Length: 183
Image 1: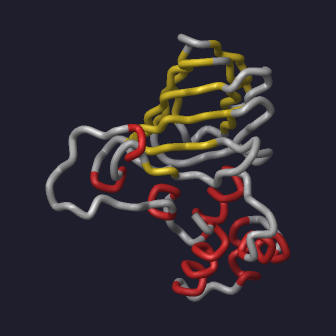
Image 2 (image 1 turned 135 degrees about the vertical axis):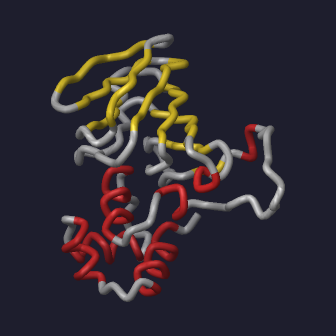
């Protein structure tokens, strides 16, 4: 997906200048320009800040929404929707189904060694939970950090500032859920 072009189109559709979006998101308009020109790829946290300033959810931004009126029940691995910026050493978030049509958002998260959700702490409405399937992840919630290994889990009010970081040498995989879908 061309994140920069899509961000620019949505920003213009909403009648926002780069400067106004930057001020709302707490970023520089130079950063917005670089992202829109695909000269830099935003962290998950930076992109979340930008989309919150528009406002639009990550799920809506990255949607390839199901076109059918019928409710889909089963999904193959290649049918999950990527809802995060992708690139080398970046976090990949893949969503199960159309979160906008449900009260629950389920994500398959992949953190390569050294990857994190960004220096900015995330915060959004809802509750968040997850189980580490492979590797280890450092989770920080409201200033408290804990390293979780395969089989360990977390559950917290996602309005609390939080971030995820792979400090290990192995790729970490987490299956998580957020309700209501707000990420």
